[in-house]
Structure formats: C-alpha cells, structure tokens
Length: 178
Image 1 (cartoon, helix red, strand yellow):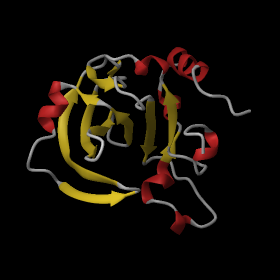
Image 2: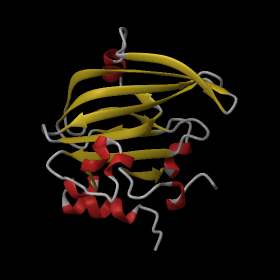
Image 3: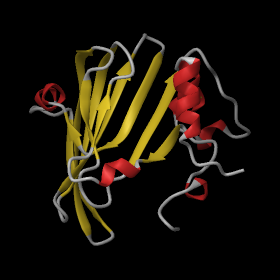
Image 4: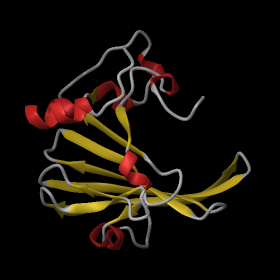
C-alpha cells in the first residue's frame, strides 16, 4: 500500500479518514469539538520504540450516538488530566519490530462546542485523522453478521450528523475515489 486511500480499507468502513496537509507544520493543527458532547472513552496507543502517542477519543452528543476521532497527536490539558491512572486497560505488545503500549479508560468529561480537544500533526508521519460514528438507532445488516464487530452493525456516516454547510465543506476536502 502507498499509505493512504480507499484501497486500504475494508468496506463498509466505520469511519472516514482525512489527510491533513496543514498537520505537517511543527505546531500541528488544532482539533475542536464539533458540538456539546460528553467524552466517554480515551485510548492511548503509545509507540514505545519510536517515542510517540496516537490517541483516540469517543464522545456522545446524545445517548444513542457515539462518534470518535482517531490518530490525535496531542490531547488538550483537560483530556490529558482525564487519562490518568488508574487505567481501565493497560498492556504492551510487539509487532513489526516495534513495541506498543495500549492503555485507556472510560471517562465522563463535558466538552463545549468549539472547545479545543487536541492537536493533530506536529510530527513527521502524523497527518491522518479518522472520524467515525455509531448510532444504536440504526441497524445495518450483512450477509454474515458474525464477521463484523457489534458496533459496526450500527455504523453510520458521521457527516450526516453535521449541518449541511459543514457537511458540504468536509465533503469538499475528502479524497474522491470515483
């Protein structure tokens, strides 16, 4: 693979991926909350070998909808404080000649619309940002549902939950595979 593009994903996918060209600057790109949400889970995948973190945050604007950002380079101070010991899970593993530490926890952190939640980028190789969502009011059906994670059965296009103007702005920035 060339490190990006639609061909890297098993479809249907539970998220969209963006490559942020501005994320290559030394300061990165600020990441803001898309609405008034409650952060419910924070994951930290630390690449011990190369010395960097890759965070994911899961947030709920309502009880039925869970959305998430993946591949965040730096968390805000508020979310960093929430991701403190004791962790809900914490383990290490090695693959491809690298060692990783995966830790995280369930949290309950209120975030306001427009509040900065982190920074994306700011280091070489960290230009990807994932955005996905699950809605328990939606049931997707597959030929063999046993081959899919439970939440994938509730995957939705997160862009459908944004205002039309923001959805269209985000669609304009997406890679077009057709």
